[in-house]
Each structure stands twice: as C-alpha cells, then as structure tokens.
Image (cartoon, rainbow, N blue to C red; front, side, top):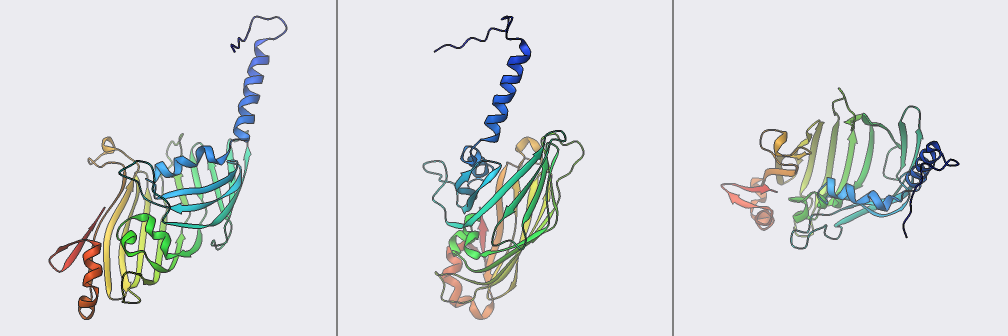
Amino acid sequence: MKLVLDFTHPKLPKLFWVVLVFTCLVVVVRQMPMSWVSGSLASQTGCRVMLQQPIGTIWQGSAALAFSEPNAAEGGCRDPLSVTERFHWSTSCKLLSMTCNTELQFAALEQAQLIHWSLSKTQIAANEIKLPANVLEGLGNPWSTLRPRGELGARWTDINLAGFAAANTPSSGVIRIIISNLSSPISPVKPLGGYEISANIADTGMNWTLSTTSGPLLLKGQGEFSNKGSNGGAGKSAGMQFSGEASASPESQESLIGLLSLLGKKEGDTYRLKF
C-alpha cells in the first residue's frame, strides 16, 4: 500500500498535516513501551546492569534490575547473575519548560528516589539503599569469582549528569558502597572481611577505589567507567576497567591460598586482579 500526502489539496492545508504529525509523535512517545528502550541500559553499561522484565511505558511502569556480563563467544549479554526485587517509576513532564520529574519506589531505598531531568542535565537526589552483596557479581572480577554473600549498603550525594544540550553543566557526585560480613561459597573462611568502594562521577565517566576495612582477605584496587572513546583523550577506550590486587593476612595465608589463586595471577606476595 502506498500513502501519498497531498499538501496542495485546498481542504487540507499544511497546518493540518503539521498538527497531525505532531499529534502522532506525542501519542507514540506517551505510549512507548519501556521494553523498547531497556536495551540501551545494557549497552551503556556493557551488560553489567540491565532491566529485567520491564512492564509499562517509559513514563510509568515497573522492572527489576539484573546484573550480568557480556557474552564474548556469542555476543549480547549472559543470563543474569543476580536480580533485585521489582521497583516502580512514575514520570510527569512540563512541556513549556521541557523538564520532567521521575519518582522511583523501591523497597530497598531509604526513601523514594527523586530524579529531575531535562535536555541540559539530570539531577539525582541524595539517597541510600541496602541490597544483598550478590548483586556485585555483575561487576566482574573479583566479585564474579567470589560469588559474594553478605550485606551491601550504598549512599550517594546529589548527583548531576550533563545532558544532550549541556552548556556549562559538569557531571558530579560521590557514591560510597560498604560491604559487610562478606563470605563466599568457595571459601571455608567466614567472614572474609569488610570492604569499601568509593566512586566519583565526572564528565568523562566514573572512577572508583576498592579498599579493605577488616578481615583476612585483603583487596584493593582502582577502576573506572569511561564514556569517552580513544579520541576523548589519554588513549583510553570507553567501557569499564579495573586493576587491583588481592592478598591474605599472615595468619590466613594458608587457608586462603586456593581462593587467591582463583582471583588472579600471583605476583610476588599478591595476586593481580584485572578486567
């Protein structure tokens, strides 16, 4: 079937077609299923974070967060390593100011998460969340090897992210993750320790440090998630990178040697972690 729009018809002026096309676009956007755009989160995070079974539209609906890793052999993402409970979102927009407000309801959050966004920036209000430690498996090594069990708490300051039409709006924010009573099904030593991840958000992406606060398994390292390609500077490629080391306290070296050998390659008294 061929559809021809006759703009010269005297009874159908150009304004009619402009209004018709605009109305159709508004209807499509308002009814756009979340499943149409959920794949962008997986591609932006390299399969580390995905939306699981999204329901509803981009304006109102629910989904769960899933954590996975890329499938290097077949492409796409592997089956989720862990999945959270479902959360719900609701968004309202003001057409004249071109701004929107989103509210997220999630049982693990200390309070409803408020997000204000526009073409120039996105603002995420400070908040706190508590999750099981197994969600860390989706971040890759050393967590995917450890298959961690324990308690995880995260808190963040107000986060500002530059938008598509950003002029002088730098990205900023700090995220602090505390891991307590970490244990692993592949190690008889329980608990393995407590750890802290401190992340800083900037225009080029996010960088973080991993440190040990207690316990016989000693982990430390630095990582980054860059949203700039090699042309963005310093020859760095976009994506997630991490480099660190693992070791054991003197009294636990013998009991943890098997676990350490799984985490990385031995270099002197430590084991190198890298992905």
